[in-house]
Image (cartoon, rainbow, N blue to C red; front, side, top):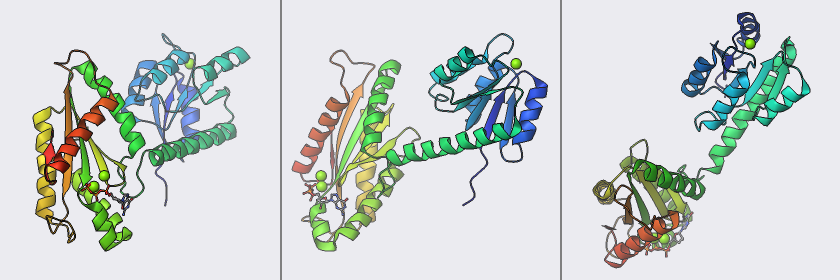
Length: 303
Ligand code: GH3
Ligand code: MG
Ligand code: MG
Ligand code: MG
């Protein structure tokens, strides 16, 4: 499949240098130009380029400072930076790498070298993003996996603490799934897991919601900025959705279709005094609620 063209951001105050680089690269890449450090930082955040070509000597702020800013910001820190500068002292080159640049090209720029290095780094960056995405994804359902769930809940606990917001967590477990597998076979069991993943994604649809497969037939939904009532609404919608769709499961004890049980845990970081919950205590609390839902008859949620 043809790859979309990579976006490359040039940050350089020298119009002649910009023109030379842009002309060399524009047949293969989408080139965006910023002639001041401020504009460059702004563009890096808004267009998410796959590479930044960064001059060092600019009025007011040096390219080294711009690189520091890029590496500080969560939105831009992973974008590869290549310094393209007339400063060719070994100490300056070393400083560039120290700041996190992936490469250092000295002016006057050799077109062939520029193109080769840009090609190598844009390729590598795409491969890195692809690997990061694979490492965070459950291959069967395409949902976030346990690793991504763990990372996200830790991140969201600090975020909600800072913003004094509520954080809710749902743990969802398929009812009588062992008998589903035993009777319909593992292949159809897998299809069923995909169906559950789709239903959950449909019900937890805010951009900030994270739906993940924790393992086996257990799923986790992180609802950032959602208070207890909102979490209960999402859980009720999930339960209702399964009861409405009636996905065949003829071997369960109570229903002839697939149902799930849900445990909810909500923390209001605005009201909270010590002890501050952590990811483990939040998951334990949702797990206990799930256990209550199972023991009180399944096909329901408990808080
Ligand atoms: P409960 O209502 O108490 O949750 O009962 P259950 O049968 O759902 O729970 P149990 O933990 O006894 O069984 C879970 C089953 O999930 C066991 C295993 O066969 C199945 N399972 C786990 N991972 C997978 C998977 O990746 N694919 C398939 N097809 N089945 C899986
Ligand atoms: Mg300059
Ligand atoms: Mg289970
Ligand atoms: Mg189960």
